[in-house]
Length: 145
Image 1 (cartoon, one colour):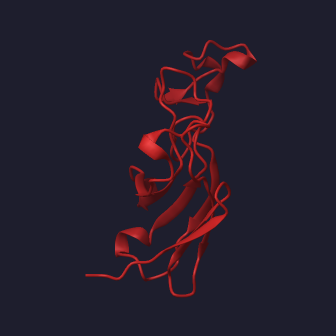
Image 2: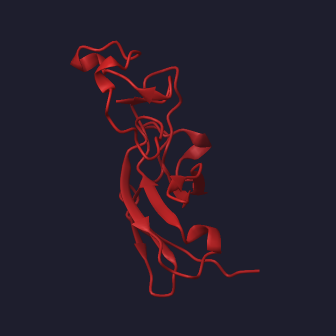
């Protein structure tokens, strides 16, 4: 698996590896982009609209359900919609597009207020985000400058 800690493919402990060496990973392809563990991506949408600024037209939006069981000392995370852009077939750093789905940044069972789950693009180019905890659908629009 790809380890965010050592930034490379490593042999997973659950399959006899030590989580540090990559001898069994020779010839395996690294991921296009790696997100932190336990963020739980639930949906991805390649944006084809023209409402948002140009930097959102080459890449994808990803809805993350958020973690609740990420092992300490790592913080719980996710519960957001991020944008993963690309340039020349290579990923750009991901950036949070919509957040505030949990109180005080906590995403554990006591902190979750909403969980982004699904994404859809409206005919006008708006982005719709479904929330399976509060039963809500959010519409995100860009009015321009």
